[in-house]
Length: 262
Image 1 (tube, rainbow, N blue to C red):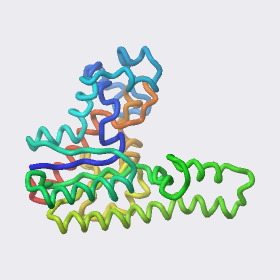
Image 2: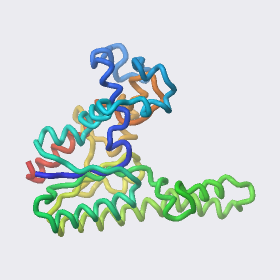
Image 3: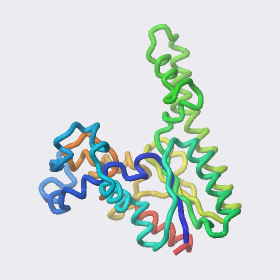
Image 4: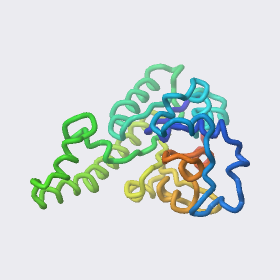
C-alpha cells in the first residue's frame, strides 16, 4: 500500500514537536481540559526564544517527531506503509502535486497510490493566482487603499469570499474524478468552515468525529475543543495539536473502512 497527503503546514504537523518536551499528563488537568481558559503549559527550550524562531531552533529529530505524530505519520504506522506528502496552497496542491502523483501512480507500478488525503487550506492563499506578487499583496493593497472605490472593494471581497472558494470546489470535483479514473480514492478535509459547507455532503469529504459529534472543519471544532497548540501551550501558534491529529486520523480510518480500503 502507498498513500499521499497534501495540504499546508497543518498537514506537515508544524510545531508538533512541542509535545516532545511536555508530558501528556501535564496537559490533562481536569480543571482546565475543555474549558475556554485551558492550562497553557510552558515549553522548555522553545519558551526561551521568540515564537517566530521556534522552527529555526528545532532539530532534525524534533521535525521527525512532529511528522511521526501528525495524522500522516499515524496513518503510515497503522497501515505499515510508506507515503508521499507535500504542502502548498489549494490550487498548486491540486493542479500540480496531485496531478503529478496521479501520473506517477498510472505509469510506475511500484508507486501505485491507494488513496490521497487533501487538506484544504485558506482560500485567500490562492490570491497570488490572480494578483501580483508571491502572496497576492496587490489584492490587499487595493482593498485597504482609500483611493479604491467602495464598489470595487465590494467586488474584491466577493472574489475572495465567493469566487475563489467556488473555483476551489470546482477543481476539487475535477481532481476527484481524475483520481477515480485512475483507481485512487480521494479524501478531503478542511481547515476553514465556509468551503467545508460547500463540500460536506460529498462522499469523499471527511467529517471530523469526536465523542459522537461531527465537525466539518478544524475551525469549527476549535470552538468546542482545545485542538490548537496555543490552546494548550504557552504559544501564539494556532496549528493543530497532537489531540486534533489523533482525532483526524481516527476519522480518516473510519473513511478508509467505509470504502473497504482497510
